[in-house]
Amino acid sequence: MRTTNYFLTIVLFFACTLSIHAQTMDEMWDSSVSGKANPNLKWFKEAKFGMFIHWGLYAKFAGEWKGKRYYGSGEWIMSQARIPVAEYKEVAKTFNPIKFNADEWAQLAKDAGIKYMVITAKHHEGFSMFDTKVSDFDIVDATPYKKDPMKALAEATRKRGIQFGFYYSQFQDWYEPNGGKNSWDFDETKKDYQKYYREKAIPQLKELLGNYGPLGIVWFDTPGGMTKEQTLNFVNDLRVLQPKSLFSSRVGHGLGDYRDFGDSEVPDTPIKGAWESIYTHNDSWGYIKHDMNFKTPAEIIRLLANVASKGGNLMLNVGPDGEGNIPEYSVKFLKETGKWLDKNGESIYGSTYGLIPAQPWGVSTSKPGKQYLHVMHRPLDGKLLIPDFKGKVAKVYNLVSQQQLNWKNTGKDIWIDLPVFEADAANTVVVVEYSGKIDDYDLKVPVTVSSQYPENIVGATYARLKGNAKIQSLTYSHYYGDWKHTVCVTDIKSNNDEADFSIRVTEPGVYKIALEYSCAPESAKQEGSMKVNGQEFLFRTLRTSDFDKKAPLPFIKHVIATTTFSKAADYQISIRPLQNGIELFKLKSVILEPVK
Image (tube, rainbow, N blue to C red):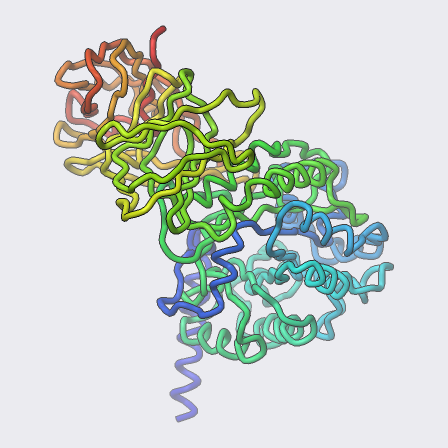
């Protein structure tokens, strides 16, 4: 019996080792979830807005090592620069974040309208930001700071009514000989991942779940080195310590309570169930002093509304510096976001995904008997369309001013008269109260195209496909680890492959039609056909670049034709290759611009 068990252990070890070497970032993000609904998900689904904090020893580096600047994910500097463990741990002797103030951080979250906070207890570098008995490579034992900032932050956050949780990198640990993904110091083929889990990851997780009070979330990252059965045992053991805590999907093997998409990814259409989209405020997650590309308050507000309109939560990251300061623009812009939420929070908190099909004015969120219209682009004539609305409208009003707005029912549509907005309005919320049942979000409803907007974008998500054409989300990056995701129609190669788009033109007129696509060099100079309501327009593809996940994916806006829509009606746009060949392009969207 012992021989059999020993043999099985060896097989599992090598199976895990081989799978780790083959893993992609998509696999390590693991967005699959358990089929069992956790009864503690209610608060999470209502929260909508969380704060992520990436803070570790990497903050002391601030994106520089030995005179060289690094760009992208600052928390990956040890890996990017291939810094030996012996040299990396020396930096801990100078890490002294004396400006850290738990009450200031927690109050910022409160002022920003944040409902839950998750902070990195240990990231991939292996340095622990809490007082651990498992390792000396931590903020209490290895630095002159000598204090546990997590204790104070957990207390300050809960005192303000905000759920508190920890991020923990359970597999990657570049400090440990048996931890995952340090191949510059240690031989990956000789690692004993089970020993690492047994001696560090599991004991530390038990410390975090046992010593810091009730945790709303344990946010895992980059699973690996364990079979599903081992992961299930790992999860069950931890749940005993914190039965009410939620585990993110990156615990692996579909055992999480809610779904996390890839870094900086939002689905194009509503997703049912509990899920979260994570973004960072600038380009990096950990602090980099030369990264100043901060999202403005308007960008944060629109991103939050977009995520909520798809049914999810936004967890926005900030990266404090090595002294314990949250960057100035993060503080300023988050407070501005909080001011908007003070007035408009009803349209976000506790909402579910919007039921109104894609519109050029913005997105919508829902509550029983209410649709919240997040108007980000005001139509020039002030006439806002809700197409094919089957509910019985009781009243329409501006959420902030409570001013009632004029509206009319034209048979199947609702038209709302909008007042003039402030020039810098990021998101003006209009409430439609109604009774009766309205249709669920329907991807097949024709996309609205109107001359009252400078451009009308019909995304690849709305394509109906023929032949071997596919709709795919393409993942690529700008700086290192600065991931981007774009949905495209791909694999259009033959006359039988086609992407069809249904649009509803609300006013007759002349429009320019452009195709936005990425085209590899070998796909360039192929001929294509675009048919609009039976009229054919021919074009030849223009080269952009190859698709490389580790590089930007440029798109060209290629104007194909000018055409006239003679009446307000539904129309069809069809795109296909003119001849059989290789992939025509990766089509991101069709763009229609009215000609004035």
